[in-house]
Image (cartoon, rainbow, N blue to C red; front, side, top):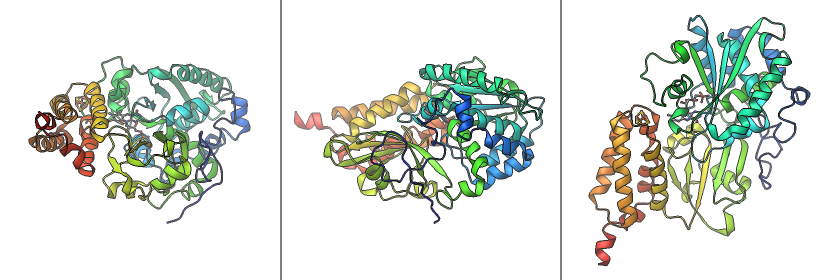
Length: 437
Ligand SMILES: Cc1cc2nc3c(=O)[nH]c(=O)nc-3n(C[C@H](O)[C@H](O)[C@H](O)COP(=O)(O)O)c2cc1C
Ligand code: SF4
């Protein structure tokens, strides 16, 4: 496993023991995010210049060589996605940046939007050149209103500086970007739902095929990537794909922004090379558990991710190790729960979230989440029965295989893993009320 660590500290952590890196986060808190001059001074737009000196096919090859996988949750290889988008014929093509950031416990895209917005639009511009797009949209969640306003200022100054618009840097490349606001639904972070939302329709996913790479926004070929994915792109061109891929491990290349939250000493957004163990992340970067308490469990990748007990924190933070242990990197959220947390109560809050966010389009998710909520409420109140375990498993299976989109498919993951790792906490809630009486 080849690893490379850079000695630097980012995020708000104060005890990161030099295990963080600063590639995509190098400008965080170091420059005025609205100043094009400061961005240029810090090496901004060198990546675009280098990309524009190559052919679009060479740009895609370089992204493939970097090994970058999408940072929005599904970890689809970015170079392959761009290659497919470039191969589609169309009168006009569109590039969308997904800044919905709706996954609970995730706040890393916010850092990029807040502290280095030029990098996002530089990455989008390189993508537009590679796939042949002329129009771009940044879909930013409603709650990030100030960041929407900042992004509009940044786009205007990139236009004025010749880094966006018609004839970018005198090369003939044309690319315009608009900011669009989300309206607060978690499901609108899903690609096709996001597109429906931009078109002014209600937030429900589309049937695929046709795939959005062929018929996306306004029926045009569309490429969607996450904020962090676009932010990695200028770095790849600035330092070269080979150098970038020296960070991380053989199958998880580069770095990842993680959102560390919950009962941790130093919550925050950190950039790490893939390959650190969860233990290193929690104790060396996060400073350990708050108030000297003991770690009880983690939830990885957001509300749709699995629960992991404290005994398993020596797993390396990589796509391959996580997959082997039934976990997902997802959005990069790492929620820490100390010994005072009750697993059943925590699961109720997760389930309340899914019940609220299910868009209602398909029965397995709409009804499945309703039934799972009823069962969890029984566990919370101590009135559950032994049959409830089988019912959870049956519903979870139906939801996983029959739900229309990722929301319903992953909604029961946390509950299933919680029952697997903490069965006693569920068993002790069976007919508790009746027993007492
Ligand atoms: C319910 C649901 C919510 C999602 N929310 C987000 C989100 O907030 N941000 C994001 O980038 N991707 C989100 N995704 C994943 C996107 O559909 C898509 O995979 C991603 O934007 C692609 O970008 P990437 O290849 O750069 O990761 C969500 C997926 C689902 C199913
Ligand atoms: S899985 Fe849930 S969120 Fe997705 S379409 Fe079905 S009801 Fe809507």
